[in-house]
Amino acid sequence: MTIPLEREVLWTGIGGQGVQLAAKILALAATREGREVMSLGTYGGTMRGGNTDATVVIADGPISSPPMVSKAWSALIVHPRYFEPIRPKLREEGIVFVDGDLLEENLPETSTPIITISATKLAREAKAPKAAALILLGAFAQATGIVSAVALDEALTESLPSYRQQFLEANQRALTVGRSAVEALTQPAWNPETI
Image (cartoon, rainbow, N blue to C red; front, side, top):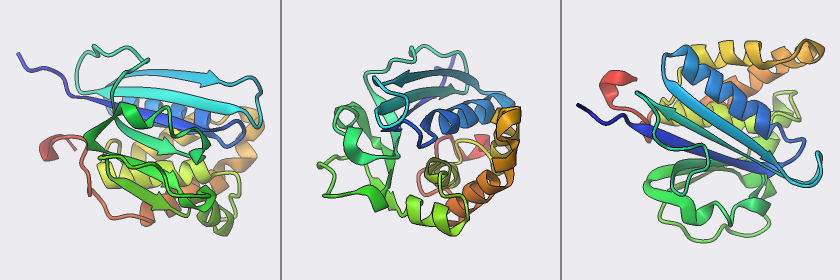
């Protein structure tokens, strides 16, 4: 019996940056592709301006990790202010994506590779100024193959509530721009035959 491969994805940012939406889109996309998924979102003391974190665990079989993980394969840092609690959880073979536009100083050293993307700038250029989290998600999916572009786009459409449908096209542009910001499969999430 093979042990399922699990990929833990940590998210952190500030309330209002779209961290929870992006995590939900990733979870739905993985579910659409037949993977097992668990997800958990947490919020700081305020909805906007306070910290917001999410954990998404994706596996190619039954999940054994709870959504509160002590070690993680990857992280998406939408705002670096809350990176420090995540840093010691990262495994060496993983990958981190960070919005470089918000870095005021270098991130603390980690043995996990860090990919810096100008997500805020790219979101503005894509006429989706509040979609930096989706830029990072598009780049992350492109670089890792954790989910396909098709599943991600379908999950985005499914995730937006009816009162936010006017942002669908802008959010789709953000995912596309994120995908074009990195090379494909620089850090594959799955074995090549399962991507």
